[in-house]
Each structure stands twice: as C-alpha cells, then as structure tokens.
Length: 421
Image (tube, rainbow, N blue to C red; front, side, top):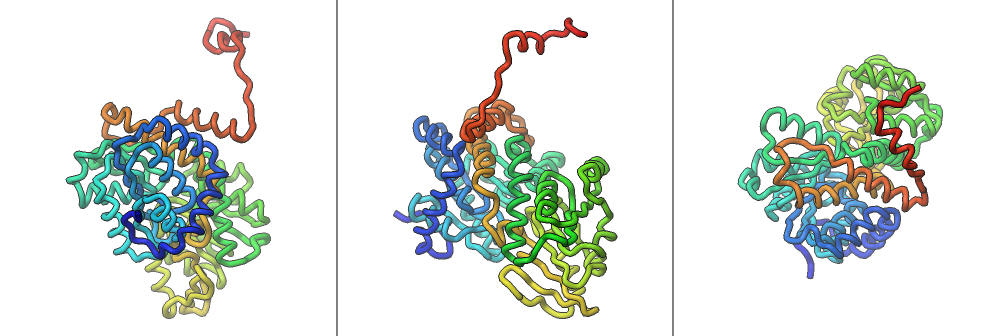
C-alpha cells in the first residue's frame, strides 16, 4: 500500500532506504528509543504532524514515532532541504505520508503544510515554527485537538517566544533547541561541519588562506567559525551582543562591524536568525568575487531584493547552487543556495551521529507531551533535565565512554554546608 504523498518520484525509494538504514547505524540513541517504543507503544492513538527537513535522519525519527504507535505525516520545513529519495522511501516502504519536493516553490511549500495539517494533529513537530504559525494564522479550528508541539531550531524558538509574549500562542511547545544535548552539539558541531561541507560541495574552493566573515557568535556560528579556522581561514566575527563579541575576541577571532568586514571578506556566512544581516550597504562594499551564503533557517538573513537591485541584470547559474550576480560597477558577487540553508541546499545537512541526540529529544518530547501536556501552561517550555541527562547517558554508553560515580562521602559533602576550610 502506498501512503498519500506529493513527492518527486516514487522510483527513488530503493536508494533512499539504503541511505536511511546507513544513517540509523550512526544513531544508537534514537535506535534504542525506537526499540523501546516498539514494545511499549507510548504514542498509541496520537496523530503527529511534522514539518522538518526531509533527510535520512528525519526518516529515522518518523520511523521511531510510528513504532511508538503514532500516526505520522511529514512535510518539508524548507523548500531546498528535501532529499527526494528519502521522501520516496518513507512513502513506499514505511507507508508514511510525505509532502515535500526539493526545489518546490513557495506556494507548493505552504500547500504541503496544509496537506500535513489535514491529519488534524494532536502534536506538532516544527523546524522553524511554520506549522505552528500556519495553525495560528489560518487553521485555528485545529487548536482544540492539539495537546502541544515541539520546536527544533533557534529561529523557531525565537518566533514562538515572540508569539507567547504577544499572547498569541494557544498551546504549549517544548523548545527542543534549548536542550543541552541539542544546542551544544547539533548547533555547534553539526552546523559547523555541515555548513563548510555545503560550501565546499557547491564551490570546490580552498578555504585555507581566505578571509571568512561569520555573522553572529551563537552556538551555530561558533561551530562554523571553529571549522573555518580549522580549514586554514582567517575568521572575522560580527556581533550585536557585547558578551558574545567579547567571547569571540577571547577565542582568538577578530570582531568587526559588518560594514568594515564587508570590505575584507572573501566568504560571508550568516547564522543569526535575524533579518537583513547582509544588506545593500554591505554588498556595495564587497570585493569582486566575494561568496555569500546563509546557514540560518530562513533566507531573510541575506537581503535578496537589495542584492538584485544592485545587480546589472538577472543572476547567472554558473554551478549547481551558485548564482553569479553582475554588479552595475563591474564587480561580481556569488550567492550560494539561493540564500537558503547552504548545508541542506547543497549538501546533506548534519551528520547522523549528532542528529541522533536532537531527534532523541524530539521523540522523548513527544512522549512527554503525551503524558503531561494537560499540566503544561500555554508557553514555550524547556525540555526536562531528566530527559536531557538520559540522552547524554545513552550517547556516552553507545560511544563506549564510562563515568565515575560519587562515593557516599562525596554525596554527603555536596549536600551539606557546615564543613569548610
């Protein structure tokens, strides 16, 4: 039986299944949760709609949720992030409805979200909050059946907290992104490696010896900066937060305003979650040949209308995922991946071993919502510490790492105040 779907080609399914199984080999924590879910069925009777990047790692999350008894549906959280063979495999081999096509236009993207919402979910899973945003703006009749949601990424958490601050959010959401086993690893190590992977695949440039400007110094940007420096680049950080800027300086990076960095950079990478981080005034100052890309969730970080206004005619596709913009003054600037997530537009996203923890958080958050949603207030919640520690423990065990345990004397000492010098 074939599940409902709108995907590129069902004939891609066999190759997708091999890649999904390969990723599972790198995801021991999620695999352990999958096995427990298969036995206990903690999600039985629940409907889960997920708006996530359709990758091999996401496929393994969908399989785990399905094994737990949930009815699941998946749509893409970014027009360029879908792996078409994975979408086909989920439809053909796992009978999971998928609505996602790599390169889909904006209208199709939102039509796919509406298709996923036709499930009338009890739980939402988001990467960027488009599912929750669509529900609150266009499909409020669904809210009565929704017990809660989960959010994967920094950008989505920012949006959801803004909704909560405005009094607009109408059901609880767990900020998976704020779990330590997510942001300290996925954001830093995953984004760092996959961003540089996407840039290199798209351009085949040598990073060593270039000036790489990284916008922001949050956890994603820290990972990008670290990997760029490891490849031999001179790294410049731009920031608006004095504490993060100070940390970047202490970590050995130059920190400059973007106006100054624009004149010096060979490669620009945004990862802030904010709007127009690279703007017309910056494009006007850039060297000819400068390469521009984004590793934040939405393409608004690069002001594309401003870039187009400065260009002398339409861009030319010179390589897959590389568009050359001829400037009116004779310079040429290169935009990667249409300004969308470069690690997923031009590469495969984060390695499975780091997504193992992120998606373990998603699976266990869904289980937590199934048990405690009625007790949660209508706001953005941090994942319980016990879940965070369970995931870390499982990951260490899978890696063959063992920990010390406190002795009774040490336990007693840590729980008293009388004994001092």
